[in-house]
Length: 181
Image (cartoon, rainbow, N blue to C red; front, side, top):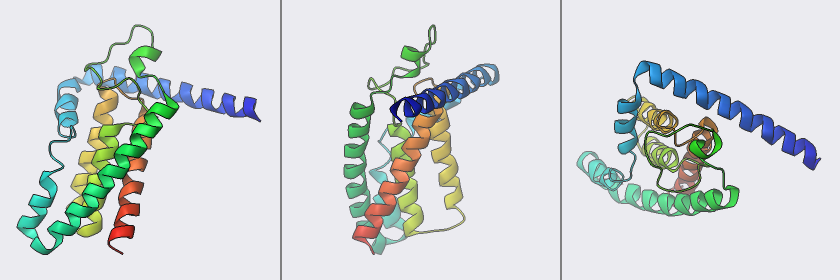
Protein backbone atom coordinates (compact mmCIF):
# COMPACT_ATOMS: atom_id res chain seq x y z
CA UNK A 1 0.00 0.00 0.00
CA UNK A 2 2.78 2.48 0.87
CA UNK A 3 4.48 1.85 -2.48
CA UNK A 4 1.19 2.44 -4.31
CA UNK A 5 0.68 5.69 -2.40
CA UNK A 6 4.24 6.72 -3.27
CA UNK A 7 3.59 6.05 -6.97
CA UNK A 8 0.36 8.05 -6.86
CA UNK A 9 2.12 10.98 -5.19
CA UNK A 10 4.96 10.76 -7.70
CA UNK A 11 2.52 10.78 -10.64
CA UNK A 12 0.65 13.70 -9.10
CA UNK A 13 3.91 15.61 -8.63
CA UNK A 14 4.95 14.95 -12.23
CA UNK A 15 1.57 16.17 -13.53
CA UNK A 16 1.90 19.27 -11.35
CA UNK A 17 5.42 20.00 -12.65
CA UNK A 18 4.21 19.51 -16.22
CA UNK A 19 1.29 21.92 -15.70
CA UNK A 20 3.65 24.40 -14.04
CA UNK A 21 6.02 24.31 -17.02
CA UNK A 22 3.15 24.88 -19.46
CA UNK A 23 1.93 27.90 -17.49
CA UNK A 24 5.49 29.21 -17.22
CA UNK A 25 6.08 28.89 -20.98
CA UNK A 26 2.72 30.48 -21.74
CA UNK A 27 3.39 33.38 -19.35
CA UNK A 28 6.76 34.04 -20.98
CA UNK A 29 5.21 34.23 -24.43
CA UNK A 30 2.24 36.31 -23.33
CA UNK A 31 4.32 38.75 -21.26
CA UNK A 32 2.19 38.27 -18.13
CA UNK A 33 4.95 38.47 -15.55
CA UNK A 34 4.59 42.22 -14.83
CA UNK A 35 0.85 41.90 -14.32
CA UNK A 36 1.37 38.80 -12.18
CA UNK A 37 3.77 40.71 -9.96
CA UNK A 38 1.20 43.50 -9.44
CA UNK A 39 -1.64 41.07 -8.69
CA UNK A 40 0.53 39.09 -6.28
CA UNK A 41 1.41 42.27 -4.37
CA UNK A 42 -2.28 42.94 -3.71
CA UNK A 43 -2.26 39.76 -1.59
CA UNK A 44 0.87 40.59 0.42
CA UNK A 45 -1.30 41.25 3.47
CA UNK A 46 -1.50 45.03 3.61
CA UNK A 47 -5.05 45.11 2.21
CA UNK A 48 -6.72 42.71 4.63
CA UNK A 49 -6.88 45.03 7.68
CA UNK A 50 -8.79 47.52 5.51
CA UNK A 51 -11.67 45.10 4.91
CA UNK A 52 -13.57 45.83 8.17
CA UNK A 53 -13.12 49.57 7.51
CA UNK A 54 -14.58 49.18 4.04
CA UNK A 55 -17.46 47.14 5.45
CA UNK A 56 -18.06 49.84 8.11
CA UNK A 57 -18.56 52.42 5.37
CA UNK A 58 -21.31 50.35 3.76
CA UNK A 59 -22.78 48.43 6.68
CA UNK A 60 -21.60 49.69 10.09
CA UNK A 61 -23.51 46.99 11.97
CA UNK A 62 -21.56 44.20 10.24
CA UNK A 63 -18.08 45.69 10.59
CA UNK A 64 -17.34 44.30 14.05
CA UNK A 65 -18.58 40.82 13.14
CA UNK A 66 -16.47 40.88 9.97
CA UNK A 67 -13.47 41.99 12.02
CA UNK A 68 -13.90 39.11 14.50
CA UNK A 69 -14.33 36.49 11.80
CA UNK A 70 -11.39 37.82 9.77
CA UNK A 71 -9.12 38.01 12.83
CA UNK A 72 -10.01 34.50 14.01
CA UNK A 73 -9.87 33.18 10.45
CA UNK A 74 -6.41 34.57 9.78
CA UNK A 75 -5.10 33.38 13.14
CA UNK A 76 -6.27 29.83 12.45
CA UNK A 77 -5.31 29.89 8.76
CA UNK A 78 -1.77 31.07 9.51
CA UNK A 79 -1.30 28.30 12.09
CA UNK A 80 -2.58 25.63 9.69
CA UNK A 81 -0.57 27.12 6.82
CA UNK A 82 2.63 27.02 8.88
CA UNK A 83 2.01 23.46 10.07
CA UNK A 84 1.41 22.30 6.49
CA UNK A 85 4.48 24.13 5.13
CA UNK A 86 6.80 22.76 7.79
CA UNK A 87 5.21 19.32 7.80
CA UNK A 88 5.08 18.65 4.06
CA UNK A 89 8.24 20.59 3.10
CA UNK A 90 7.55 20.64 -0.63
CA UNK A 91 10.36 22.41 -2.44
CA UNK A 92 9.59 25.41 -4.61
CA UNK A 93 9.89 25.18 -8.42
CA UNK A 94 13.45 26.60 -8.66
CA UNK A 95 14.69 23.84 -6.33
CA UNK A 96 12.84 21.12 -8.24
CA UNK A 97 13.31 22.15 -11.87
CA UNK A 98 16.90 22.33 -13.00
CA UNK A 99 17.76 25.68 -14.58
CA UNK A 100 14.47 27.33 -13.65
CA UNK A 101 14.54 30.73 -11.92
CA UNK A 102 11.49 32.35 -10.40
CA UNK A 103 10.61 35.94 -11.20
CA UNK A 104 10.52 36.93 -7.51
CA UNK A 105 12.19 35.71 -4.36
CA UNK A 106 9.78 33.70 -2.21
CA UNK A 107 9.41 34.74 1.41
CA UNK A 108 10.04 31.22 2.73
CA UNK A 109 11.59 27.94 1.69
CA UNK A 110 8.62 25.69 0.94
CA UNK A 111 5.75 25.95 -1.50
CA UNK A 112 2.83 23.88 -0.20
CA UNK A 113 0.32 25.44 0.33
CA UNK A 114 0.31 28.91 -1.22
CA UNK A 115 -0.13 31.43 1.58
CA UNK A 116 -1.03 34.29 -0.75
CA UNK A 117 -3.79 32.17 -2.28
CA UNK A 118 -5.02 30.94 1.09
CA UNK A 119 -5.27 34.47 2.51
CA UNK A 120 -7.03 35.78 -0.60
CA UNK A 121 -9.63 33.01 -0.59
CA UNK A 122 -10.17 33.40 3.16
CA UNK A 123 -10.95 37.13 2.76
CA UNK A 124 -13.20 36.67 -0.26
CA UNK A 125 -15.11 33.76 1.25
CA UNK A 126 -15.77 35.73 4.43
CA UNK A 127 -17.03 38.70 2.43
CA UNK A 128 -19.31 36.47 0.38
CA UNK A 129 -20.68 34.83 3.54
CA UNK A 130 -21.53 38.20 5.04
CA UNK A 131 -22.82 39.94 1.94
CA UNK A 132 -23.51 37.61 -0.96
CA UNK A 133 -24.07 39.49 -4.20
CA UNK A 134 -23.28 39.21 -7.86
CA UNK A 135 -20.45 41.71 -7.36
CA UNK A 136 -18.63 39.13 -5.24
CA UNK A 137 -17.85 37.15 -8.39
CA UNK A 138 -15.24 39.83 -9.11
CA UNK A 139 -13.58 39.13 -5.79
CA UNK A 140 -13.30 35.45 -6.67
CA UNK A 141 -11.78 36.46 -10.01
CA UNK A 142 -9.24 38.46 -8.02
CA UNK A 143 -8.44 35.54 -5.69
CA UNK A 144 -8.07 33.20 -8.69
CA UNK A 145 -5.78 35.79 -10.26
CA UNK A 146 -3.68 35.80 -7.11
CA UNK A 147 -3.38 32.02 -7.32
CA UNK A 148 -2.40 32.15 -10.99
CA UNK A 149 0.08 34.97 -10.35
CA UNK A 150 1.96 32.81 -7.87
CA UNK A 151 2.41 30.11 -10.53
CA UNK A 152 3.34 32.65 -13.24
CA UNK A 153 5.95 34.17 -10.90
CA UNK A 154 7.47 30.73 -10.44
CA UNK A 155 7.11 30.40 -6.68
CA UNK A 156 4.31 27.80 -6.60
CA UNK A 157 3.12 24.74 -8.44
CA UNK A 158 -0.57 24.73 -9.47
CA UNK A 159 -1.54 22.24 -6.74
CA UNK A 160 0.03 24.52 -4.12
CA UNK A 161 -2.49 27.18 -5.09
CA UNK A 162 -5.38 24.69 -5.16
CA UNK A 163 -4.45 23.65 -1.62
CA UNK A 164 -4.20 27.31 -0.60
CA UNK A 165 -7.66 28.05 -2.03
CA UNK A 166 -9.13 25.10 -0.14
CA UNK A 167 -7.36 26.03 3.10
CA UNK A 168 -8.54 29.63 2.97
CA UNK A 169 -12.11 28.82 1.93
CA UNK A 170 -12.61 26.00 4.42
CA UNK A 171 -11.11 28.02 7.26
CA UNK A 172 -13.43 30.92 6.44
CA UNK A 173 -16.48 28.66 6.34
CA UNK A 174 -15.57 26.97 9.61
CA UNK A 175 -14.82 30.17 11.53
CA UNK A 176 -17.94 31.89 10.18
CA UNK A 177 -20.11 28.96 11.24
CA UNK A 178 -18.57 28.88 14.72
CA UNK A 179 -18.71 32.63 15.41
CA UNK A 180 -21.80 33.77 13.53
CA UNK A 181 -24.15 30.80 13.33
